[in-house]
Length: 315
Image (cartoon, rainbow, N blue to C red; front, side, top):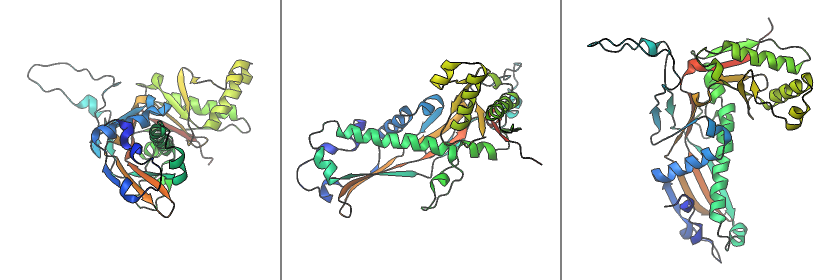
């Protein structure tokens, strides 16, 4: 089955009324369909293309992450087992993904929309792309603002999952540092924060960091650099994506004054291929309704390689 056939709209975009027996559909996508849907979510996001997105067949998974580690070679002695000391010094290596709790998106297609698209051959693709785009945007946003794993039906958006900032702040293994804000000088403050990220990062990854920061802090940095070096072109383009050779990645959802440094591939978002979809006709709102349930989780493969920096609290 092609991924765009999930909707089967060719059978329901017809003249006259839409009745419940025409559209009853429910269950879990096949692994192939689920993987296609998850990959479409990834492809709609620049961030998700850069980090590690683990599309897993199970709801829980222990990852193995050895890429990028240094100092792991040891002397081979015939007849003796290889020591695990080098791995132990890094702490836990490989994210433990828990994708049991799902998040839901509901799409309602009114009778008017269905009637208007009876002759639109691309309508199914449009709805499929719209659904994956919503998940792409919201899952990335949740990755920055998520504060808790609240499994209640009434859980607010920020409690649908713990995002990367919360995981980093709560971990015993991540590097936590501060910077001193400069009064009435946003540019100097941002430079101090970026310097703190670079200086406090684990030496194994210090030169390979991507620094994630708020849009507001990033804009202050761009304007400051443009003014300091009279670089009008930088101000015109609004882009200055490096600090001392380290990539800067401004993200919607990161609070002003908070900075996260990590190799890109060390950020992990898990998505289970066990994706639920339901379809029904609602007489109450005269609409064909689709509901998709996706199960995400946010982690780091190696916590030691993560640096989170916040403003120092005055004594």
